[in-house]
Image (cartoon, one colour):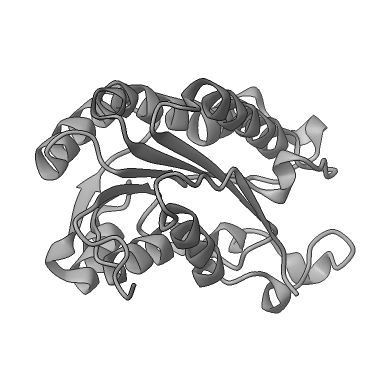
Amino acid sequence: MSAPLTGRTAVVTGASRGIGVATARAFVAAGARVAMLARDRAALEARAGELGDAALPIVCDVTDTAAIARAVDAIAHHAGGAPDVLVNNAGLFVPQPLDDTTVDTFARTVDVNLVAPFALVKAFLPRMRERGSGHIVTIGSVADRTTFPGNAAYSASKYGLRALHEIMRTELRGSGIRATLVSPGPTDTTIWDAVDVESQPGRFPPRSAMLRPEAVAAAVLYAVSQPPAVNVDELRLSSA
């Protein structure tokens, strides 16, 4: 099918850049209506404007409980209830040695990467259960199963996110609600702008060798486009 998501609604967090906006583009091209969540109003509205009427920009700091509540209300109105697909993508990456990582940085990373996805699942899951359908996609990382020096906060949050996915998969089996973990290797997005990867060749690949956001978006689209009786439990992506 050229438009396998026709008639379906989706929510994508971190949707103003990188994997998030690439996923929103892929979903709209596949026929979905997409609520795009991000903090940066100007960037979010610009990207949503490029996608036309099928995209709904919702300014939301996913660490703000009140902002999430407002976003959920707007999405419920937009989707007529819970969305068909939730993609928890928003992430924070601040690579630092353990000694240099502050408690605030650690807590903020866990809030964005782990607590916020849980909050959104918690908000939409009851309505998905009532309907008997839905798909929760979690964007993980190679760091959700492999530890790297200088990556305490990010790895801790992503390991936790993997555990959350596995619990969801266990608890939701047979409910009609699917759950997929997409774990990409290093992906060339603005998350790397503050990191001098070229001067650390043994630690990070050059950005030219990283995955493209569109490749990760294609994997997400593949997972959510499968027949209702098929669940793609996990996809691990790496550059060729």
